[in-house]
Amino acid sequence: MKLGFFGANVGGMVSRQAGEVAAHAEGLGYQSLWVGEHLVLPSPRQPKPPLDPDWPMADPLVTLGYLAAHTERIQLCTGIVAATLRQPVQLAKEAATVDVLSDGRLVLGVGVGYLDLEYQAMGVPADRRRARFREHLHALQALWTMKEPVFHGDFVWFDGIDAHPRPVRPEGPPLVLGGKATVALQDAAEFGSGWYGFGHTPDEAARARAVIFQHAEKIGRDLAGFEITLTPRARLSLELIDQYRAAGVTQLVVSIEADTLDGVRRRLDYNAPGQLGLL
View 1 (cartoon, helix red, strand yellow):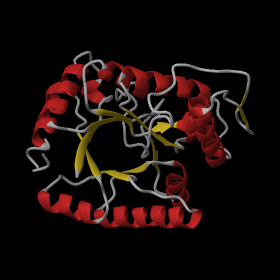
View 2 (view 1 turned 180 degrees about the vertical axis):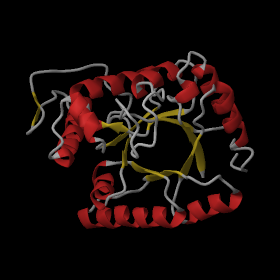
View 3 (view 1 turned 135 degrees about the vertical axis):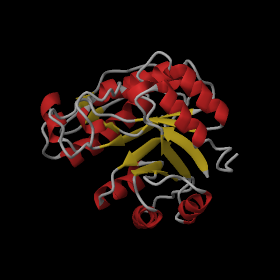
View 4 (view 1 turned 90 degrees about the horizontal axis):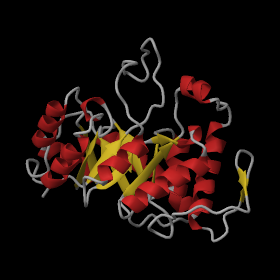
């Protein structure tokens, strides 16, 4: 079981000292760090997401570029960016830049996004969001992998262009898809090298994994090496880790969100891989 941490771009981590904390986590044996994304938050606060509108949440890819300079081995992961809300040509450039600057450590977690207010604020139509999402993923792959990138779709259209740097791996950085709806799990089976779930129990994780692998079998896709990553709501214990392992989870990502850097450090130390017998 691999162990990562979530919250590298929120709360106390929105600080110049975040790089030192990320290096500390790497030294503790964490294998990945994860950043989330909300471009805007509802004001006044609403039930979803359960965050105050003044909760600091830095741009995920800018943050990963900064943390890349302070770390050497830890994977740099978005969990997740709302690819439907981002112009895919720009997202492809940003992701490739982080990947090159980190020597291929980027894992790009992507999803549709669920806040209508964000769609409104970004000027993106909220209808056909799943179709737009899939098209954006195809456009990313075209820009990363085609010798002469070309894509003609309903939402994205380009040809006669090129964009460098390209990602370190010829196929581009690994794509990890989020979302718990059946259609999101099926998209993970079709497009992703992994799936990231938030708050699922071991039983829920096992059911999500089953949907993903059943759909992969249906479409004839081999999911060898496919990663099931999960951030649990419950505090980790050896027993709970074993339950997630039995459910097919390959990586657990603990939330270390806190208002201060001291609070982040305490959570990192408490949940360190060595403390949980994962080294």
